[in-house]
Image (tube, rainbow, N blue to C red):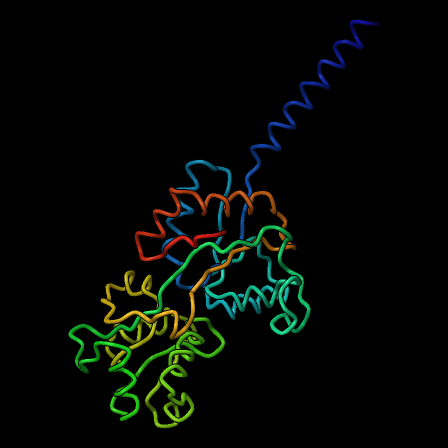
Length: 273
């Protein structure tokens, strides 16, 4: 009888151990929402992450931060959100000011939000710079004379909001310029970049990282006085089904290996996370 009990307990321990091992090696799928300007670098980071976390598969959804915020709000599955602007993250964060999070949304997992990266807003032109626009000062002068066509992001996406601040800095009316047919819009930074690359506009305002990816040479960089600091926040979402795995990937994105990928295309780490 004792031998039978011992054998039974031994079998149960083995079954338990196998179950634990299987649980630890079970594949995990993370759904990561990333601002369009992060497309190339996040995909590269995911490839490298596969080397240290082979059981983790990462599915990306890239779009404007405003569109991603809306999708999350409407119930889309998302484990980790990386925004190109603080506003879109604040609109999902219950700890943010009620002036920004006007709907009292509560999607950000407590204690997971960080400021991950810093970018630069740049002025770019098509190859050869046919209109001869070499600075934001020259851009402003040409827009006053209504001599050029500029591409910018919509007002509901971060790159568009930064461009609006630049126009305000130069005391230019976006509405008047748009009505005069001197501004074209893109629903995200990639669309603005494409308009410049294809030469359908005289210039455009994008991030330096997108200029790098598209092979465009920035002719000028916006200062903090023009449009503020461009910080990319990241956070695990409260409704994540893989919160621990999402947090682990976010921590990897803060590592030296991942940061080297970001810096190679023009991003910089934010001094204090």
